[in-house]
Image (cartoon, rainbow, N blue to C red; front, side, top):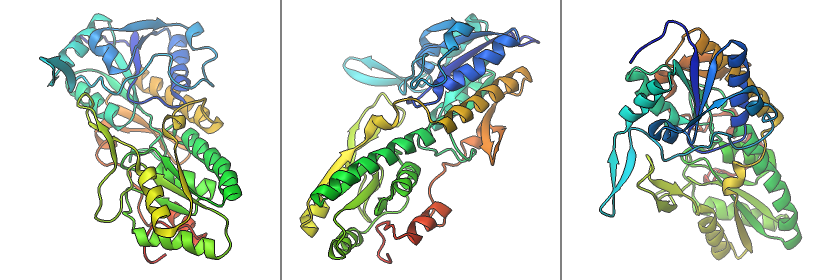
Length: 368
């Protein structure tokens, strides 16, 4: 793969699921890149566009006014892994390696570097492409906030805001009808959304993937609140939560995805069990993709802009194979290899958990 001495043309893509702040990063990359005389290719639909050859050139007019807009002007896909590319053969899905095609398009477009915006899956793909000789800089995006190398990922704050707003709204109807309300959040195997959203929204019970819960502890909490004259209870449950000795609730499986398991539906299970075992009227709400939609919060707009401008600075300085990361109040960088070594999961000793316990939140454990 030919390498130019001077950076002249870069590519940018948004991989995985969408979230608020993606456009802010695209803007944060493109504007300073153009100011430095670089050409910017926007690769469409994530890594899918890199494999099949879909891209457009970005100009200042394309990124003006997109700071506050949710989604991504480039499109995204969580099924475009070049190393895990699904092909239908005689009615069956066969997984193939399309990394060669990705590199061919990278070279054909004359790219000197690629800025890949995405979560854990995107960073794993970026590492693989780096090992094949591609110059890659990663920008961490995920509402799940499950990348260990950065204190926060953009999109998380915006999703927590949606969860908090939903709990605030559900509390009024829960109070009016004296019901238990169960709210299901995203997050897959990490409980940060349920923890932070539940804490901000004043949930009475928070159930996390990292802390398998005891059904009796959940029942006791809502019954005790009812006996104390509390008119309602709010349960915030992560989609990956499960009872002790139980299994994950799987909505469906999709062989085209790198991780074929699609979680969802645990709120319905929790609601039914609470109603059947306590006699308290219970309803559930699955927030789903509402958490991904809409514009970014002010915090995420600022963080996304910092991430984007820092990423293009790394490219200009030819510091490849790195991912931008928030450390305290400063944006720095880490190697992509180190960024994906460990998934960031909630620990029982985390300050947010201890704070929640201190104000009476139940995590479905007996001692509470």
